Amino acid sequence: MDILSSGLLTVFSFVFLISLVVVIHELGHYWAGRMCGVHVEAFSMGFGPTLFSWRDKHGTVWRVAAFPLGGYVKFLGDAGAASEPDEAKLSEMREQMGSDAEKCYHFKPIWQRAYITAAGPIANFILAITIFAALALTIGVNYLEPVVGRIVEDSVGEEAGFQVDDRILTINGTEIERFREITSQVVWRPNEELSVIVERDGETLPILVAPVMTTVTDRFGGERSISQIGLGPKGPTLRERYDFFSAIKHGVDQTWSTIYVTGRYVGNVVTGRAPTSMLNGPLGIMTFAGQTAQVSVEAGETVGESTFLLFLNLINLAAFLSVGLGLVNLLPIPILDGGHLVYYAYEAVARRPLSMKAQTIGFQVGLALVLGMMLVATWNDINYKLGQIF
Image (cartoon, rainbow, N blue to C red):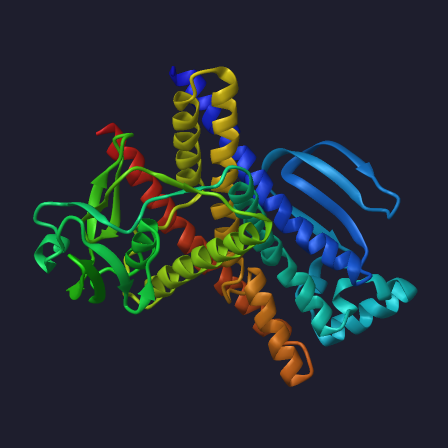
């Protein structure tokens, strides 16, 4: 694949992924607001200059903007002080709005505001469940049994005493049914000693092993640091078929597993028990989207097959990205949905909104934290790209 085609494919894949997960997130806020009787003034798909727009029968302006890298919902009253509610300011605003105040987000009961705020991340989780379930129902799920097929030389797995054909039964008491579940248990636990139970020659044996951060080179020539114990799978890929209800259960289980692993990793990063090397920003997402698209297209023997694999793998990637977006937005950082929920919790207990000064400080701190996270993630993304070049 030439550079131009690869670049266009990367841009298309990235825009598709970001647009899907962000629009679903904002639709969550939109529908929750509508359910609670809040007037939605605008729903924007993308940022920047408006390409085209229309007004629906409810008075909401739907716009498609030039830069499809996000979106937003604007509720009635979302401007200036009302975005950081203060009791005095809100009283003045209520008097100015008159009867329209009943349609204003900021005059709704706390539980409705909390519901509208949480609806964005919830929509992302529902999207992930739907995608995982749909894929399980239509094409099934490929998996590898948790049997050791190879052991990396001089790895901590070799030192701990693992042997080829060992079947991993549990890790720290968690039952293991698929080989990918081993990775899920290891990836967020660098340097933490794990208790692993294996089955060997009909007997069960305990093994203690501590994963270590390892630099690996992928098929694209880039280097990534991940937590590993140095074990590889054995045997052909198996495919499991699901009926409707088992597919729904699989969707829920896969979404929860992704939330759990991501959440534990972020928690370990915050507490200093895990490095930040696995954090990725927009550049990293674009890179991975492009790589996924390239592999998908090259795997197909015909244009139709390549297109199908491209759609399939991007949709699957969108499910994981949707979980990540939902989870990040629930972090208790003031500028994010989770921060707003913290403010509403305070308001429910204190029976008054947090002061304007405190909220302003909170938003400033939140913005600094988010920018800091983005800088770290972007630094990781740049280092990966440099690793491909040099």
